Structures are given as structure tokens and as C-alpha cells.
Image (tube, rainbow over all chains, first blue to last red; front, side):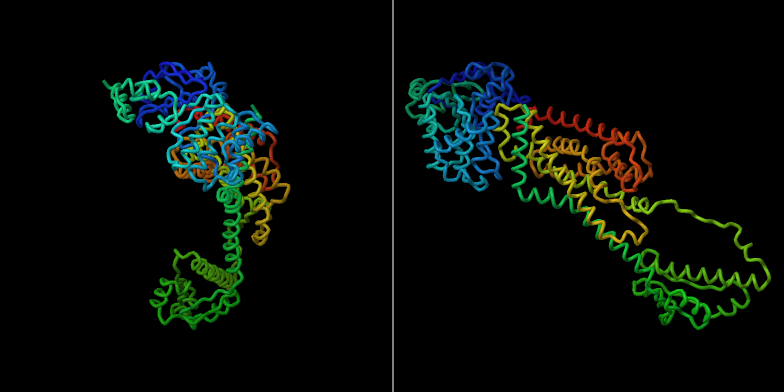
Length: 241
Length: 393
């Protein structure tokens, strides 16, 4: 469960987010949707604690991300935008390294790594060095790495960027599995169709503020647009008015 | 706390050992560059200097027929008289073009002048800017000077004068340097090669901690793990330290071997660089690794990319030479207060070791403590900078 309350963050004179509030419950996929530069990544970075918000609060399973950042990180698996692997290590070593940094070791670690490898279906290339992996393979390994501690909350920043159709489909399938397992998944994208196809709840964010927070049908209703793309554009313009 | 640092350390070491290119520059290029360069340069210059002494000097002489006695004297001094160019002007041209090293010109009234006891004019023509040629010319001039001295003595004896009045002073320069001491002047420049090897050994790891991780996109996920940034940076700095120590050891060993191939004994030098000195030098130089690794990590953390970091770090490679250079120019001797300066204190202690002079334990203690303290301070600064948000770029 992720709760964000009136979060703000500025970089110099630029206000990246100005009072973002929403919540993402367990067992649901929440989509964070917005145009480029709307503040999606800044919000997510504050949630996985690499940025400190200027004001407002955010909690992960009730743990404050500012006051108790190390403990909050234990409850998150984060896949930042464009996450990279260590090219000289094998996929398995990449995953195990994160497992160790999460505090796992010995048989428990091996077991977790084997488990995540079979669940993500990456067994074919898990013992190869990651240098030269395709974008799809890299994304899967990066996802496996952040899921190795079986976190309750999963934050994915534009994970489908640069993936082909097949890789995108299999990633969506994985995200649905996480939802079925009762996890809280927070997923950002700038593609309306993708969010609509996958997410239970959609948070449309524009110019650093939440424009609308509802289901896909709710958004159609509130904006009065049947077409999702029109609804998206309408929602964004609502902020500016 | 320590388990996580160890995890980061182990991963960095494994990662680095697998990166062939980085490993090449860290453990082969860095440590071997110095010894190889040194061996080649010293071997060339030493063997050339020794060859010049032994080889007869071939000297074209214009007007040799006017001074038969002088020619005989020169031949006894291992100088071979050769047929000259047809004129003085032709000789000067040939020397300017570098075809001849030196030419002797004897004027046709040489015989009359010698007989009259007036100074006889002899020219040695040479190009002073050509060092090799000028050395030959000096050999000829020295031989002429000796001949001149001999003739002067004979003239005085013929006039019944005691020849010792020609020497009001009897100057004797007494050289007290030991053979090891003489080699130390030459080997003093070695300390920089070792510092260079150390820095090369840890360079790519130091860059990787910030600019490298960022460029690869692996920094952000790493920072979202339940590990403090202090632990991450400490694991990375210690991994860099390990490679720097390896590189230092390889470099010292390579030198120890390379010195066997140098004809230093023929120059009257016996370098004191056996296995025991290698081990002692290793421990004297080792404290520098923490400072070196932290300094490189610190500089790299301000850069945007691996390439940019490499550019800046090549300046860091030169920084430790500054104190060594200044002290060499001022010809300062080992003193207690200099032991507080990192890189300089290692240099001075190493020179003492090579000279086979006793190393003062207090000096070693100050050098180790001061270098380590400054290293810890810079490492702490790195950790502070690693907490910045700007780190993400």
C-alpha cells in the first residue's frame, strides 16, 4: 500500500511536482499517466527514496519514506526508467547481488533467485553475461533483480519503453501475476492505451499535479469523452484551466 | 554493516576482474609502463656513454702535416687521424649537415709559433647543439689541453724552472657517496612510477563508483536498495584499494627484476633493490592507496560520463608529482616535517631505502599516520558527496 500526500519537489526554479496526492492499494495495479515532464518520474523517485521531497509525505505500508528510508526501501522493489545491469556479470549474478544487498544469503538466496528466474521465464539466458542482451532480456533481468526480495510494493517507471510487442505482452502478463499475488503495483507510462489495458486505477498527472484519479470508465465519464485519448487530453487541460 | 560493504566489495572485484580491458590497464599497463620505459632509456644512455669512451675517436685534421708530433700524441690517446675535407669552409658545412662530428684545423705557421714559444692557434670545429658530436669534440679538446700542458712542462724544465709553481693549488675532490647512494639519484625518480602504477590500478573502479554506474543506468536501482550510501561508497573504495595494492606489488616486483638487466654496476652504482627492499617499500607506499582511491573517486563524482572522468583523472595522475618535483628541484633532504606530506613522504622514504640508509621509524610512523588520516578525510568527503541528490545527474 502506497499513500502519497501533498508531495512537492523543486529543482532550482522549476517546480517538478506541486502537491501530488493519491494512494495505490494492495492487489491492484495503479497507473501513473501523464505527458513527458509531468512529474511522473519525480514522484516515483521520491517514493523509492532516491529524491527527498520538499514537503508533503509518502508512506509505504505505513512507513514514512523520509523519516525511515532504509526500512521503506525494504518494502519496495523499484525498476527505474532505463535501469542498467552490470555487463560483466551473468544475469544470475546480477540478481544475486541485489539479493545480498537486501540481506539474503546462503540457501535462502539461491532459492529466491531460482524462484524468480522460473517465474519470469528467464532460465534460457540467466547464466550468460548480460553484455549484449536485448532490451527485452535486460528489462526482465532488471525486474527479476528488484523482485528478488519479494517486496509487497512494486514501482515500475515506464518499463515498456523500448520493448517490442512480444516483450511488452509478457511484461504485462508478469504485472498481472503480481496483482493476483496481492501486491501493490504502481506503474508509470505516457501511453493511455497501455495504462487502460492494464491498470485498475489511473492517476493522470499533468504539470506536477493530479488531474484525475479514477478507473478507466470513471475517467471516460468525468471527461465526457468516449475515446480514451480524448479523455486523456481533456484531463490534462483540466489542470491548466 | 560490514557484511554489506563486503558484498559490494566482492561484486566490484569480480566485475573488475572480468573486465579485460580495464584489467589490462590496471594490472599490466600501469605497473609495467615505468619499468620498461626506465630500462630502455637507461640501457640506451648507459651503453652509449660507455661505448663512446672505449671507441677510438675518428678525427679529420686539416694541416696535419704541420704538426707531426701532435699527431703522434693524439694517436697515442686513441684518436685516429683521418683525411680532412678540402677546406675549412667545407669542414664547417659538413659539420652543420651532421656528416662530421668535429674537425681539427691547424694553421700553416703552427711550426713557427711552437718554435718561437708563442701560443699556436688550433681550431676545434663542432656543433654545440648536437650533444653526441659535441662530446667527441670535447674529447679532442681535452687531448689537446693535455698535450699543451705537457709541452709547457717541458719548456719550463728546459729553462730550469720548478714545474710545481704552475700549480699553486692542488685540488682533490673526494667523493664519499656509496655506490648505492649514486644509484639513488637515478632511482629517485622511481617513486613516481610506483604512485602512477597505484593510481592506474584503481582508476576505472574509482570512476565506476559514480560516473560509470550512472552512465550504465545501474546507479538509481542500486540507490533504491536498503543499503546506506556510505556502505556502497566504502565497498567501492576498498575494492579500488585492493587493485591499487596489487598494481603496486606488481610494479615493485617488475622493477626488482628489470634492474638486473641494467648495466648500473658499470656506472659505479649498485642499486639496493632486493626482495627485502621490495617488501619494505610495499609497506611504506601502501598507505597511499586509500588517499589515491578516495581522491580519484571524489574527482570522478563531479563528472558526467566515463570519458569525462578519464580526462579529469589524468590530471589527478600528475598531482602527486608536484611535491616530488619541487623537492627535487630544491634538493631538499629527508626531514621530519616533510613526512606530513603524502606522496612526498613516500618518495623520500623510498629514496632512503634505495640508498641503503637507515630509515627513521618516527618518519615512517608520521608518513603512515598522516597519509592515512588525509585518506580518511577524503573518503569521508566522497561519502558526503555520494549522498547528494545531484549524483543522479
